[in-house]
Image 1: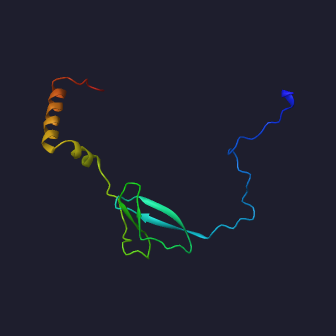
Image 2 (image 1 turned 120 degrees about the horizontal axis):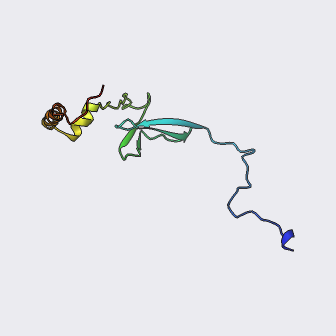
Image 3 (image 1 turned 180 degrees about the vertical axis):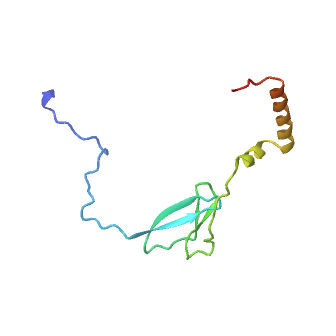
Length: 115
């Protein structure tokens, strides 16, 4: 009898509904930009009231981009150079001291000559 038992579907695994004959509301995407340069794209219904501000995932307030927004100035993220990242970890005095130490090690033969 076990061989002839019917196998069922697990509850909630699949939906039996389809998207046939369904009319979705008209939508429009709006772009929000936070001070850190993150861009957030949020779809809204066409007849919805669109907020001028949206909370970014970083926690800062993002402003709507476009001609409607007064704060739509181009937000550009400042490029950090290798030197900028190095100065975040050490002062220029420490770097000079480290350079002198490395040059002395090189002149004393700590580093092999590569030819």
